[in-house]
Image 1 (spheres, helix red, strand yellow):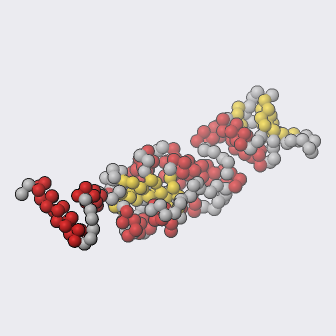
Image 2 (image 1 turned 180 degrees about the vertical axis):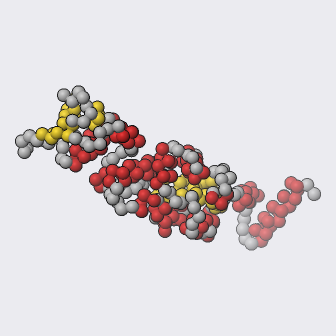
Image 3 (image 1 turned 90 degrees about the vertical axis):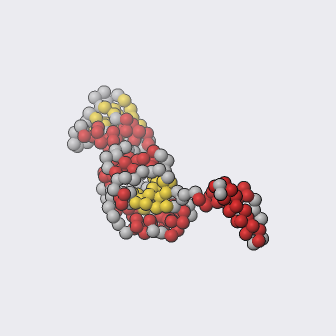
Length: 272
């Protein structure tokens, strides 16, 4: 018996069974239903740097397995590809891996696959409890924490979604919304990225020596920097002191991040 003839006989028998059960369906509708049923489920990949229990719970979740075929990259020993993968979940997102991803560094299987997921437009999730940065007190590290928060904010802008672990399945299945952006310490909420800032500050004098000249009580507070390079950090510190005007002399070099920080904080820069 020819293959096509066999398929036609099978379809005919199925349609007869459906008709006997009171169901009316055309051959085209039946074929479409069978094709949809045969289509493979989209993939969900777990990325982790070490084995844990929470990622295994996700992989074995009945709700998730109903919608996705799941897999763990760590168990595949580096042989994983993103073909057929729709969603990627990051566990054990250390500050090192976070900063590497934000800077485009992909020197480990973990960062390489995460970067590929971002480049390919995959859905990328991370449980809040798996972000190492969130394990430290908010504001406890000052400017350094601000720099790390800026890296995480950058990843969120690239498409990374953050959600509590107990809501992870709901977020993946579209039944709950993820965080739009990570929380920042109030005092540092407007700070930007740190790559250029860290480079410029490395060459500066260690102490931001300034000369402060105050005018009448009703006047705006002014400062003139005696140091050569004025960085974003100097602007932030001046803003904390209530400075509204900074006089920039011919010997001062004002970094681009410093200019942006002054604009953000409504500090006027007057060149002399």
